[in-house]
Image 1 (cartoon, chains in turn brown, blue):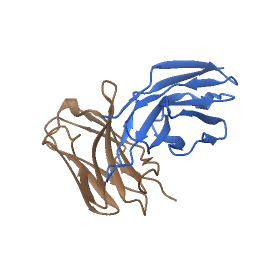
Image 2: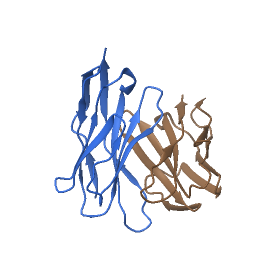
Image 3: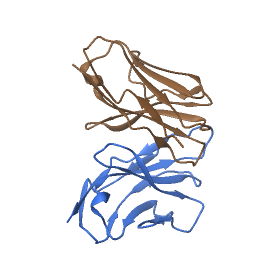
Image 4: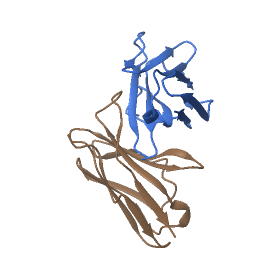
Length: 113
Length: 116
């Protein structure tokens, strides 16, 4: 079975540009999570969805960040405008419910110049 | 707020030896789940082992086992017969059982080096 699929794997762009990260969760999983990982702050939960509905977005750093889940098989995380401090690895994960392990995608390494 | 503490930023072990990684957590809940994840240099986050708090029996997955002490709020990971491929960052994580909150709370990680 296919795991969580993220794209792109790497993204390098200049500050001020819009960045869109994409995620396809595992089929049948009803929870989807976006994380950011940096050396300084470790792994941070940005937002998560349950049945396509955002449940907790308290980790979204500021209004420049937005996330959508238009259907059960697709989610996006958008940064507009991007800043150098947004450089990090962004992970998407999905899970089949409480107590079920979260399965992570391979991450997107984002570099904002 | 729930917290997860991994007190060992780095650990090292000789190949074929056994190593134990520590994890403690703070919660007032009685029903919850605990996980260990592994992140090798390839940066994938890989589930190693899962424990349900209401189960007394310690989880085991091949060379990986846990020592779950609920009263002490401790959840250590033991790796037996360590292999070079075990070298990675290891994260302990906690998930509560209340409401619709499926969030994982992660520790800051322990970097494990395996020496040949």
